[in-house]
Image 1 (tube, rainbow, N blue to C red):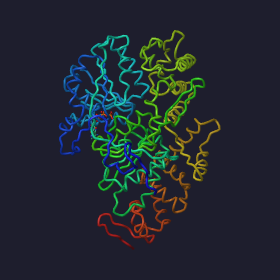
Image 2 (cartoon, helix red, strand yellow):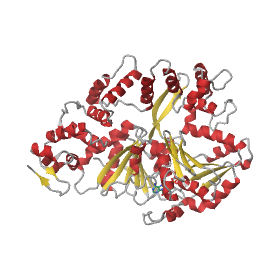
Image 3 (cartoon, helix red, strand yellow):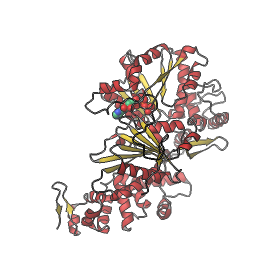
Image 4 (cartoon, helix red, strand yellow):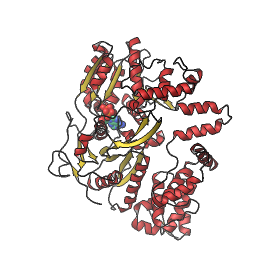
Length: 619
Ligand SMILES: Nc1ncnc2c1ncn2[C@@H]1O[C@H](COP(=O)(O)OP(=O)(O)OP(=O)(O)O)[C@@H](O)[C@H]1O
């Protein structure tokens, strides 16, 4: 592994001053790390937002809209709702509702606020995300929103405030363009309608380091940086930002391959993925503390970028890229593009460190590239298909789109294209209002075309199949086709499902096969990994190196208990030369192989390790 050359701005050489120099923004609160012995109340009072409590409450009383700008981690998300609750804004049946654009933030922040309030999640503090509702008698509510809907919601709330002046709206961020929001809310209203409150102070310092030279492969570089942090730096977990699931898997595989080379006395590494393709429970695993003697590495997409606190994160590795959806209204086609992040995103990512102790953010690009990044990310509403959002607006009674006050106006062509599509599909009538079908479709939490397909399937008597297809299109790629030789094999596997009629029926075939094999997650997951490493599932053949890689991956993805996995275990033990040899060389494999039944090991002439007594047993 080559040594990594990072350059701290303002220093004479790369790397050397990283431990001393800090990029301080605002006031740094030089307090000791919050240990569990420090009471929650004391911890809350130490947050930078605390000394602004009275000012904030005064402004909220006086102005309809308050725009709060404060450094990442200063306490906006977790404290503001509690301040409101404490002074009685949730009395008389009122609700304090907070929106978060991501599930993982909504659920984890709700959990944290419930702990701080001293209540069970779902009582005073709860959350609602799609398909999951945990609030009964809730006073403080976290609701999941997508960022295009954040824009729509602000427009609607501005409208509602004119009818319900008692309603209060707080918009908060570390990287928001506060004056443009102020202008938006005061336009057409009294100048007192909105006010900006700036909170100075940040929780702990975060140093920022840049690569000296640009890298051509940021995924590999990310793995290298993680590895050198692990070998060279003291304790603290690591959060890596990449753009999507495939990159995350590749980075984790590169790290998994390095694990056997860890020195005997080194701290272990726990590898975790975090992306939108995981279930809520799988996502929440990243919040569990690492085992004793182990450092947690979380490789994530930008879903971990804002509002999230993962206790223990000291190091952030930022690839500098993000995958965004763009829409071309001329062709009505959407596509995903990997683009450089904005400066605001880079700040948010760095802000994931420095929350429960000081931190370091390693940006995988030279400092000179930072100035070329655009200051903020283009709002989603300006680059997305508006069919579903416009249908939603109409279902909320906003019929005249020309009069709607957009926070950022979408391109006229996108609005026109969406309206044309809705009229052609019979969801919007000539008068611009929703038809009966339109109303039904607007009730469905899926895209317009999918909802329409679902309703029509009844007439064609294919409801069940269409339901499956609708569900399959809602998840990310179900087929994983890697590069290289393993990819050719994976492609052959995929073709077993291919239908002449097109991708939708191919997805239906894949789902039906999954059902036939008992709907075991292990069937599809295992198949995926066997394919990735060029190993046919049926025979478990393959050379030792590929088998070993596959084993590490299967272990990482936690489906070690499936029957197929046991077959592979046995096969692996046999092909990799047995337990004894593994004990000499690879720690990771030892842990994997201890799950094999002792009888089988003895039968095949291997020793086995008795977990209870710690002794090796041979036949
Ligand atoms: N789950 C948690 N475990 C430990 N500490 C936490 C947790 N959640 C929040 N904190 C503490 O509370 C502080 C404030 O977090 P909060 O999310 O309210 O900040 P914020 O100002 O909203 O940040 P951002 O702008 O990044 O969303 C964190 O810096 C951290 O010290």
